[in-house]
Amino acid sequence: MRIGHGYDAHRFEKGKPLALGGVSVPYEFGLLAHSDGDVVLHALCDALLGAIGRGDIGQHFPDTSDEYENVDSRLLLRHVFKLVEEAGFELGNIDISIIAQAPKLAAHLPSMSDCIASDLKCDVSQVNVKATTTEGMGFAGRKEGIEAHAVVLLTTAS
Ligand code: MG
Image 1 (cartoon, rainbow, N blue to C red):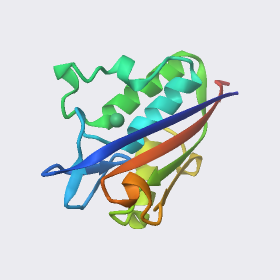
Image 2: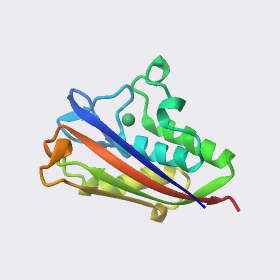
Image 3: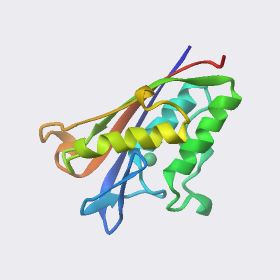
């Protein structure tokens, strides 16, 4: 078994769609980033890369590269998961925590699990996505941005 953890945070920016967990969430702000700013998928990519000992998302997709400007993070996730499979592992389970004071995310969490399960070709029961606020504390609490943690467990492919 291999375990990996990933963390990411991005600040809100006006005039950009909000992509979270591969899902488009209606809100007045998106997330400032070189890519689409999907903190959830970035944290997940880092957790997967961590579990196979392959560094982090910035090493694989440099934010200085035009190739990744406004890129759909689902493409990055699929690429990272290919590395996981090539390394001889399969997915055990994923647990994700999103920290956001706003927008309200509860209604969107099942779609995020569906989206991730479809990209990783696994059952939706292997992908848990949850969200919490910080009761107004810190940058997420001040609605300056969103952060996400991901933990993954991989097993040797059968
Ligand atoms: Mg990021």
